[in-house]
Amino acid sequence: MTGVLIPAFNAAHTLGRLLDDLQPLVAVDNIVVVDDGSTDQTSVTAKHAGAVVLSHAVNKGKGAALRTGFQYILSSTKYDSIITMDADLQHDPKDVPKFLTAWQLGKSDLIVGYRKRLGSGMPVHRIFSNAITSALVSARTGVRIRDSQSGFRMIGRDVLSSIEVQSDGYEAETEFLIKAARKGFRISGVPIATIYSGAPSHMTHWKTTKRFLQVLLKEYR
Image 1 (cartoon, rainbow, N blue to C red):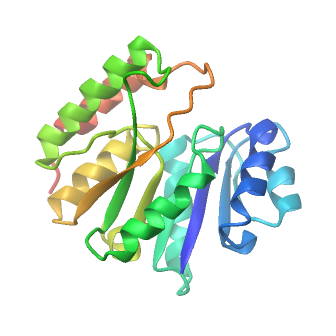
Image 2 (image 1 turned 90 degrees about the vertical axis):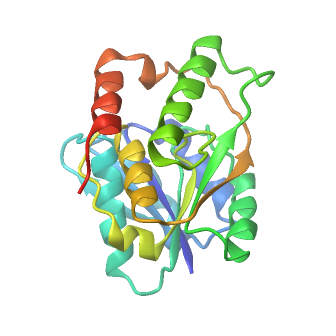
């Protein structure tokens, strides 16, 4: 069975719609929302929809939220895979069947959704940052990864149980890819909708970029 994992921070204004749109595709009790120390009604919104809610008392970062969700998924024997999505409506639930179809082919352990860059409405600075980071991660892993910063992914249970992510921030997604490739897991991609809400790119922040480079260059045992 496949579950859906959504890390969320102050996402009450978008989370309700996301959960509504997901429910025709995924049973609501298989949707796990990790409220990462929100100060709004994120938890209330998720509980009202019927999702499983895990909460951090304070904001710890996306990596920490993913780690909490992964631990929950692994604690249950009913899940053989998980789809991760962001809570800000930049991932379209209509793309979920693409992951499921690709997964059924049995050729992938980890599937990463990739967005179209040119002609998609994505701002120029995001096009460059996405292209550069994806190229660097592809070079580091030896696997072509078209959109390394995409949080829309499908991950097998074997991958989750084999990888311990240590990073707490957005760089955790890069760490996960590097470790998965290093362990020989099969990584592929599916095209997903490019949705841009006008929110600032986290990869343009110096602190996040610095952490990305630290993870990229780190030697893992």
